[in-house]
Length: 176
Image 1 (tube, rainbow, N blue to C red):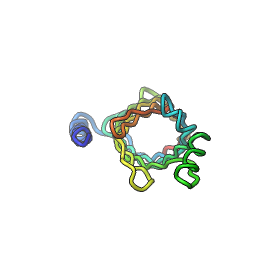
Image 2 (tube, rainbow, N blue to C red):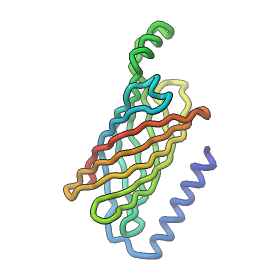
Image 3 (tube, rainbow, N blue to C red):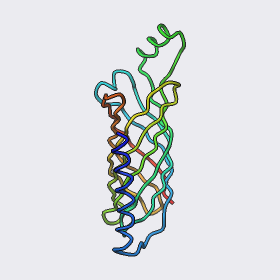
Image 4 (tube, helix red, strand yellow):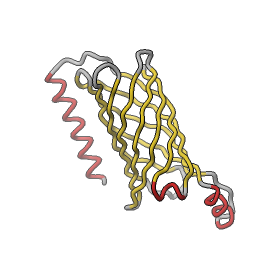
């Protein structure tokens, strides 16, 4: 996993320099802040009922319609009622869920006026003491309106301790 992240970082760095030589960058760098809401898919849905979070993203232009992105934020995975009861009876304390802090890099490309596609990879660090981190990836499509409001649909996958899990999420943000 570490090799994959290193390779991705190197490829992003090389793409910045190669795109910079092809064409001048016409757009300024952008910031993007917003919220996300998601539903766990597959076996993850058995333990978690929903996911909510907030994010901050920096978008650096490398070509006319292509940006390299770096983002972080906070996500909260809320336990199902059954898991809440189980943790209360077994662990002896009431817990509502698990938090994570994702750190991601990626590429965002605009197709015309405001329609875009985006892919990111990175790592999430869980806020519970003693938790392992996970390798994360997400793919999404969305639209940025002229006033800076942005909405996107995303598929997010996680690999923690060789277990793959995923969620479907909607993001609402503001790009400026």
